[in-house]
Amino acid sequence: MTQAKKTALVVCPGRGSYQRTELGYISQHLSQPALLQGFDAVRTALGLTTVSALDRALQFNQREHLKADNAAALIYAAGLQDFAAIDREQFDIVAVTGNSMGWYTALGCAGVWQGADSMRQVSSMAQLTAEAAGAQFIYPLVDSDWQPCLDKQALVAEQLYLHQGALFLSIEYGGYAVLAGTHSAVKAAMQALPACDERFPLLLPGHAAFHSPLMLPAAEQAQSQWPEQLFATPQLPLIDGRGVVWSSRVAATAALKAYTFGHQVSQSYHFSRAIQVAVKEFAPEHIILLGPGASVGSAVAQSLIAINWQGLRSKADFIASQQTPLPYVLSMGMPEQRRLVAISE
Image (tube, rainbow, N blue to C red; front, side, top):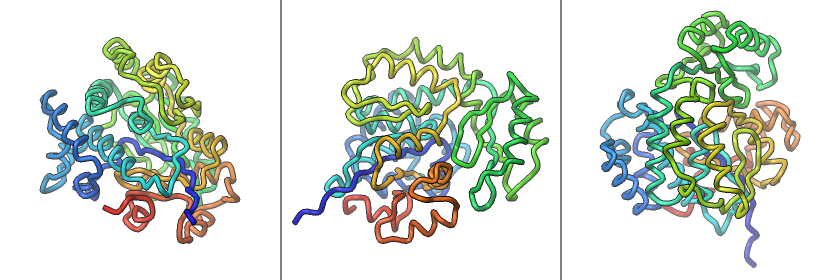
């Protein structure tokens, strides 16, 4: 008797997910060699380093690999390769979402952006936004057990109030706030916020003021540069950075373009809301996290805990819930979980 497929929500990671430990990830898990060759050809035509050359470098070069257009290319290529590797005999993908730049990967997974030429948009958008002003940093809003910390929330709210017009909530990222703003506002806020967990506040290297009004010039340029014809009707439902569901086969391509190169670039990205809407609307039996890396896992878990999804109330609850032969959240960036998701490589 054929075993019934499990429904799954796919989540695409954003900027910063390809780090030193991910070097070689794409070549190791290559599921679509022809697509990667196409990506490389597009990058060569643009005068940029190919994805293959970056991924197969002998060592990780922070300046080279974290450069905006290179990082974006690596993340997009890795995500699409992972998406193609999901075992469709075992999983029925019911929706796709992503964090920040992961929205572009989600567009590729859902068939809105098609073929190798989508690498042109990804690389160009990375260049446009990297050239914009400002910086980004991250600060926790939860305690060590992923419970809301009112003191930390108040401290972040105070900095946003003190630097109105210069500091903005960039990404609602599970139990973390990603703040973006002018260099002076970011510096002042980071100095004012108390240090915690020996890491925070953490400046995100190579990041401009993404998802803030400082990106408006980049958004306007992208809107005029790219035609609506680059967007196809999605083949899978998409959940965007507002928590809005774009239905498959009926979503308007003009609206998708307007959101992708407009609101998505210059307004706050509510990743937590996207996850919460996705699980409520589609009730997936599993959540599959694409690579590279596995850093998005904690933000996904914190987003679920915030709404007490399936009884989850704390970090301990989430860890305990994952101790099953087929965990609810499956990260393709973790070898032991990837084996449960991917077609044999």
